[in-house]
Length: 98
Length: 142
Picture (cartoon, each protein chain N blue to C red):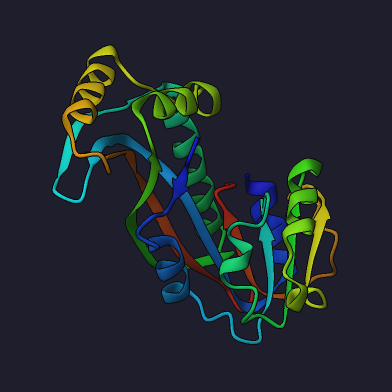
């Protein structure tokens, strides 16, 4: 099966129209395999992706580009219990997950 | 959902931004697409549970706004395309991945197969989803 997603590139275009990720600390909830993460993480200063699916997180870690190693992190956690102190992030992104 | 939004509010700095991006059920359009033309062959059927999920998410955001946690700054809809090589792949995907939310009726399956069979060799089958993207800002004192 050859599945292609967002063939017109609208998601990335709208995402960057709606938020400036430059040097921001970003929390992504429902990151899955990181498909969305790779669309903005280069610009951020720190990106943390949360998901409850360990298999998806494993793929995200494997797919992580080497130049993002120091600033992109994936965690298994539920969105009702975000494991960070208050006021840690500049941007939160609900990725297909509300 | 409200618990999630409460946690996001806690984790965000004052005036921090929340981006909400998700598909919205709206009887998404099925198309057969080639270099020569785009032909609509039908629409998917939305199931009540999927529509209820959308409504619950909208309600949770509305509650967070009413509670003074977030202010809605911008909202738009845009098409998000899923594309497959053949009609069978579209059908399999829906039956395996999205069977709780949407379905294809027999007439749409038939018309999609017919349009694809007579289309040019480069023809693909695609589903045009409706996506919501909204930007919310955490209130400075909330």
